[in-house]
Length: 279
Length: 347
View: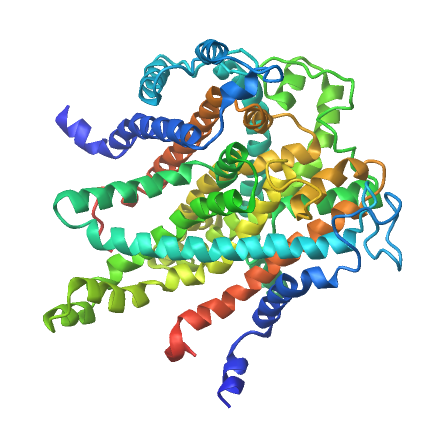
């Protein structure tokens, strides 16, 4: 019964989006009919019943590569979302709690806050290009770069919420009841100030997918033959001029669908994070 | 004098912190480039026959990469104060020249895209205020909800496939002009330059090449600006100031102006943020349409591990962003004096 009432209140689109994303992360590779990293037939064959999305300039099956690419792009973006949100929330809580104190801790807190504001002035893609470009593209360097790009946003959202929540009655009540400040922070302030960051997760995810693919496209991200949407687009783009649009269009569509699915999940996250009262 | 200062504190303060922020950034940019592993000296030495420590030191000195990281950082900041961003290690030209050769073209594309977005948003706002038609309003509401759900990268590719391959009406996405034609150079802004030298045939040609990328930028970014503007309008449209204007018999135009002026703040902030994000994001569009720009320099610098080049690029981009944010703040405080710090308004 509870499942039913839950379902009634969650927009169907959100669920479809969430399931689609998870489905492709888990089963994307299995759906690939051919080896995504091997030449299977002649180059640049247009879409047919045998090769649904055609083959690319080297003769690899585009459908298999798009599916396998989902596992890389979506999974990496999910990891980044989790890491950036956890790091951002923790940082946000810490600076939100400390920045109004006197002394060294307060100064450090205020310093970090100002610095987080300043990070706005470096475009995300530029940070990605510099870090991944210099470190060399690996799954680790991509995750680090993207987490660095995304966590300030989450930290700022959490900090703003901590500043609001801090003055609520239950915080004072907790302190009066003799809880240690740490306990109040993690038991009471944390769960009550996570909401904006959680709701922002789907945006972070969508943005990560875009930046990831953009890095691949610019030749800074994962290199071919690794099936990654961005590098598939970049290696196929010169062929568009000669009329072979399929190696480029399908990864671009996949990218777009992933971002749209993420936007659809936003409603779901909002409902989950507002807790049972809002349901 | 004192009264003048205190009345104008709102913009004086804001102006004075700008260089400070830029300095913090330069240090951050230096740290960011240097702390990431990678050795540009090794990249430049011919290591096929092995190399000695002397070879390495000589190359390091030639590239200005000798000494401790602290002394390098100090030199870097000192040079910066003299307006010197250093010399590119891959092209051996001053970084500032390298960037200034390419930056205007990038800025032109961004300004066309954002200018178009602002125009579209204003037109939409006008339509929204004029009409009672439900369908039109629903379409406008739907458009604002597209914000963030469409990657410009994918939309650009889609547009190329549709308008170049399937319905071939757009010129080939390989540069601003037909290959082989050289671009006139006066200010560095390609479209403006064709007008300045009076080659209107080139202007038309370049405009044709600009249509698709600019349309993509406008389609994507107008949505976000329109979203903020329309939220603002919804909030302001039946507020007391509007009603007062209508009641005192103001013209329709004056009422619209008053509503727009009060609801513009957050869309101007969005515009500033978009400018910042586009300084990076437009690299992808430039590459896709074969336009040269400052992004190409950054990519080349990364490939050749050109540290001074990268630092210079980061500082120039961050500086432009900061100036953009600064202009946004000033514009908002000019439009609505209630936003100036220290001004108290009782509603």
